[in-house]
Length: 388
Image (cartoon, rainbow, N blue to C red; front, side, top):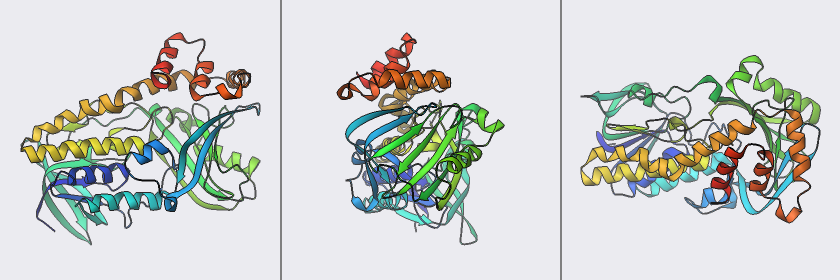
């Protein structure tokens, strides 16, 4: 290993791997540090993603695709179902393999990768981040870098150590719980969503297929709801009522920052990407594709900054992210606030109204328009997302 790198990336998830890859493609020296033993583990994710979100960065490969998704099934409290059909919409991934392949693209571009490297501090000189402190095989070490990219997830400490304001309001931190279970009889091409007080008040419940008779089953509720009743209790109740004998293969729990991006995601010597920057889609809670986009933008700009020998170029990252996806996330945030507090009766009415629309005209945009028909200001946001 070198004693100094142009760029150090902390965290080898999708956002970190893309940051490392796109920086390395600029011909600069890159090191990606991962605290866990294996890239891609542990998995804390529903694992669903659009096909377009994948193929912007890596060609689709059956070895990490567990289900091809063509439909959304939206289930209301009274049991009514509204189905939206797509053409080749997306996938449910095997994240352990997918993340590994993303890291390989970074390595193929020239990035070095070190696992079991636990970053526990930053090197800061004259108010500028200039490297990291980390523990590796029981030894405390330091490495200098021109730029550090924090891709260390929802629990990120990198930004806080650098002086960035990473606080998130309790209500915007989704409390999530999920199991992967077998003997689940569902269509393998459909993502199932459940809404209402019994499933996930202020959020939604999901059942995502992962191959034949296997599914990720989970939910996310706002921190305010989770403070009163745990997400796990809602999950257990659903499993008891719907799949009481289903063998559980894995169980996970954690937080998802379902809000807009941090106001500031770069500072001298430091950039944040993915969950660390709050680049998750506020409406869906999905962060794989948006994290890869954020990572790619940050990596490209960081590489350019080093090549130009103009390190303050990284401060253009905030605007570049905002133009690419940040503004869209602000729109999703407004839509989320408009629908997630609906009553059970409202969800039922939406489903009934949507099912009156001819099947060939049932689109996701029409669904949201049906839901928000009495909220004209939000219909403009719907048009921005689904029409313009």
